[in-house]
Amino acid sequence: MSTGVKDSFGGYRSSLVEVVRSKGIKDLAVLRAIATVPRHLFVPESIRHRAYDDCALPLGSGQTISQPSVQARSLELLQLTGREKVLEIGAGSGYQTALLAELAGTVLAVERLPELAAKAQVSLRSAGVNKVTLVVGDGTLGWAAWAPFDAVVVAAASPSIPDPLVRQLRIGGRLVIPLGNLGSQRLTLGIRTEEGLDTAVIEDVRFVPLLGQHGFHGERPAHD
Ligand code: SAH
Image 1 (cartoon, rainbow, N blue to C red):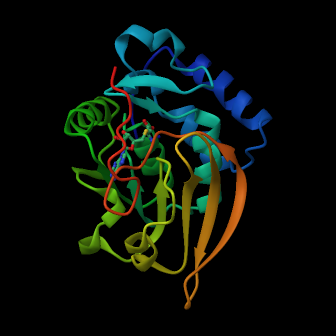
Image 2 (image 1 turned 90 degrees about the horizontal axis):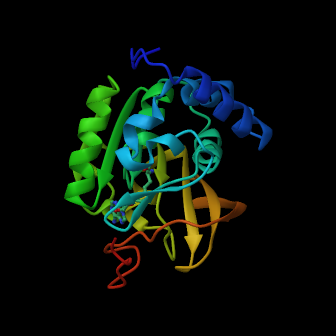
């Protein structure tokens, strides 16, 4: 295991793996990543006792750490083999970033809020995750300097698929994004073709908004 963290939470992680598996996740690498990454290091101290529940939790700054089974579904859809270069938009707590580090070769992550990015850096370091480059910025613009990506995962809800993300995906590459309005969305898988993107709707989900040039404009989430 790459995080190298020794702790006494292994039993809780195993229970979470069983819950996630019971929700239909079959990818063994994804299940192993959940069994490995210490989620309690990515949630605020005051709710650490809930770290291994399969639910979204408040992160502060009006944001949430997503429900593990929904993250697992997104990651399973990417079909990662361990070698890919992946772009994550909306790193939030850094938990999904850490899962990606277990599943891909290189992880580039963008988070809009500096205070969350700073906390995520600390959590990633304490979890022993080092394969990750996390920056503050507007992820709807992608990260042209590192393109093309083998996969892109967006962890915030968008009214449409940001164009730069499609352009920065290699042909055959996979993109997962919650698409819809501020209240409800559909987790959507896109596969890059020569012409554009083939898309498929996977399931109903609820994420905080993607705020940026190619996401929602002006609307701000309620702050804690
Ligand atoms: N995957 C995260 C959950 C993040 S919640 C986790 O495991 O904790 C969604 C995150 O997207 C929030 O932190 C929010 O600040 C961020 N976000 C919203 N719009 C963004 C944008 N344009 N670029 C980058 N991050 C954005």
